[in-house]
Image 1 (cartoon, rainbow, N blue to C red):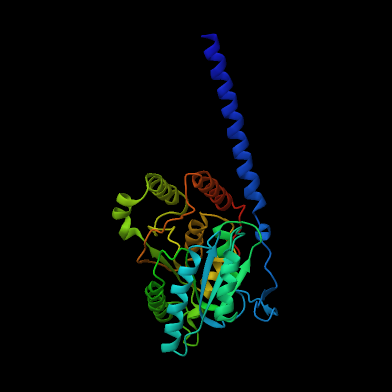
Image 2: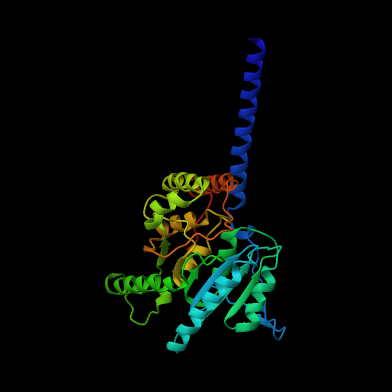
Length: 335
C-alpha cells in the first residue's frame, strides 16, 4: 500500500510539473509571437532562372498588377506537384486565351523541401516564364501557414487563391469562389458604406473571403477516410467551435480565395505557422467583419497527406496559443 501511495504521489508531482511547464511554454510562446517579427523576412527579389536577373518582389500593400494570383505551398511535393501545376496552368492558359483581360500568376512557396520540389518548381518557371510562375524559397520548413502567408504577402493579384500542391480540388472550381466574391462585392457596393459603394473601386478594394468547403462530402468521407483522420476531424471541429466560433463548417479545406483588401488585413496579422492558421483566418475575418462565404467544391483525397496522428499535439498547441494570444490581448490586431 505504501508503495502504491508513493507511486501516486510521484505521478501527481510529475503531472503538476508537466502541466506547469506546458502552461509556461504556452505563455512564453504567445508573448514571443506578440509581434510578427518572428516570421521569415521577405526576400527582396525573385530570381528569373532563364536570365538569372533579379525580379522586383511585390508586396500586398502595392497595387494589384494581375487579376488573380494562385498561391501553392509545397513541402516535399516533387511527385504530386507536377500534375497539379500542369492542370492549373492548362486551365489558366485556356482562360487567358478566351479572355484577353484575364491575367494570372502562380506563386509556388517551397517550404524548406529536401527532395526535388525546388527543381520541379523552377522547371515550370522555365516553361511559363517568371512573369506567370514564381518561386519563393523559405530555406527551412516553417509550416503551411507561414508558406501561405509569405505567398499572399508577395503576390500581385486582385484576387488571391490558396490551393494545395496535391491537386485535390479541381482548379476550375475557383470560378465558384470568384463568382460569389463578385456577387457579394456588388451588394457591398450597393448597400455598404460610402467607401465600398464607390463605383470606381476594383474588386481588389472590397474585403471579402470565400472558403471552399468539403462539408457536403462529410458523410462519404467518414466512410472512406482512415480512422485517425475522422478522429482528428471531429475533435478539431469541437476545438474550432470553442476557439473561433461558428460560421464556417470546413475551416481546413486548402482552397480559399481572398480579395486583395481582405488578404492585406488578414495576412499581415497571421501568427500561426502550421495547420491551424485557417482557424486564425476565420477569427480575423470575424474581427474585421470581412464577409465570409462557404462554397462547396469538388474534392478528392490524394495519397500522401502530411496530416497524421503527430499533427494532434501541434494543432492543440497552436489553438492554445491563439486562444490565449487574442483573448488576453497579448496579440494585437493591426488595421
